[in-house]
Length: 452
Image: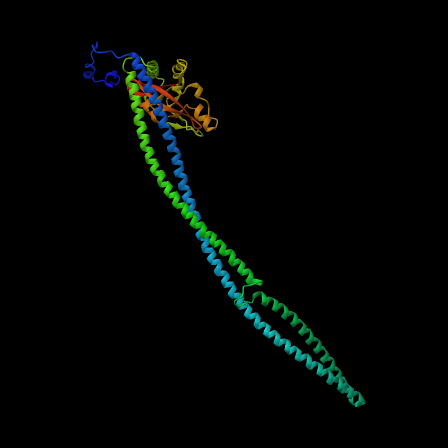
C-alpha cells in the first residue's frame, strides 16, 4: 500500500509514476483512513523516539559507570600497591626491632662487664681504706713514741703526724670512692634490669617491653595490610567482572540503539509516505509552510548575492570560528551577520503561524545555526542548563536530526525526536524541514519543529 502513497517527491522515476492511472477506476482510498493511519504512524514515531531517547540515556549512564569502574580499578591497584609497600615496611621494622634487641643484649653483656670492674674497683677501694686505717694506727703509735723520746724524737713525731694526716685523707677519699661506686652500681643495676634478656620469660619492663609492644603493633599493621590486600583483590576481581558485563551491556545497547533507529526511520518513512500521498494529513500544513518559508530564505540569500552583499564563498563558509568562553560552544561564520539581518523576518512569523510551533530556524549542511529565534538568542550566563535551553544561536546542532535536516535535498523531510533542553530535560516533537537552494547549490535546510 505504501507504494501507492509515494508522491513525486519520493520517487522521481517517471515510468513508475505512469503506472498510477490519472483517474483510478478501483476503490478510492478513504481520506479518513489516511488520517487515522497518519495519526497512528505519528504515535508510533513518538514512541520510537521516546524509546531511542531512553536507550541513549541508558548508554550515557553505562558509559559513566564503565569509566567510574575503570577509575575504581586504578584506585584499587594503587591501594594494593600501598598495602604491599606497608607489608615490606613492616618486615623491615620487625628486622630493625630484632637488630635493636641484639644490640641491647650486647649492651647488657657490656654492662655486666662494667659491673664486674666496678665491683673490683670497690674492693680495691675497701682495701685502700683498710690500709689507710692501719697506717693511721701505726702513725698514731709512732707519734706516741716520739713524744716519749723527747727532743730526740721530735722530728720523727712530725713525720708520724704527717703520715697520720695523709692516711686520714686517703681513708676519706676511699670512702667517697666507695659511696660513689655504690650509687653507680645501683644505677647500672637498674639499667641492666631494663636491658637484660631473661631466657624463656616475657619481658615485663624496660626496653624489651617497648620492643615487644612495637613488634605487636607492627604485626597488627601487617595483618591489617594483608587483610586489606585480600579485600582489595576480591573487590578488584568483582569490578573487572562487572566491567566486562557492562561492556557486554554496551554492545547490547548499541544493538538496541540500531534497532530503535531502524524502527524510528521506518515510522518516519511511513509518515513521509502518507504525507506525500496527496491526501491531507495533520502534517501537511506544516510541510507546506516550511517549504514556502524555505523558498523565501533561498530567494533572500540569492538576492543578497546578486546585490553584492555577500559572496557565494562566504555564504557557504564552513570554517566556523569558536567564540571563547562559551559552553555550550558557540561559533561565528562569514555569513553570520547576513543571517542575523535576513532570517528573523522569515523565521519569527512562523512562531505565530500555529500554537504548536516550537521553533523555526535555518541550518547549513553541517547543522550550524547562525540565527535562532529571538526567544532562544539570549547571551550565556554561565549556567549550563539555562544556557543550553535559552542560548541556542551560533550553535552547531550536528545530531541525527540536525544533520538530516541540513543535508536533506528532497522536497521535504519529516522527523520525530527528543529535543535536549538542558539539565536532563527533553521535549518530544516532530519536525518538518525543506531544503534551501542558492544559485543551484544546496546551502542547507529550514527546520520547523512542532509539538504533537
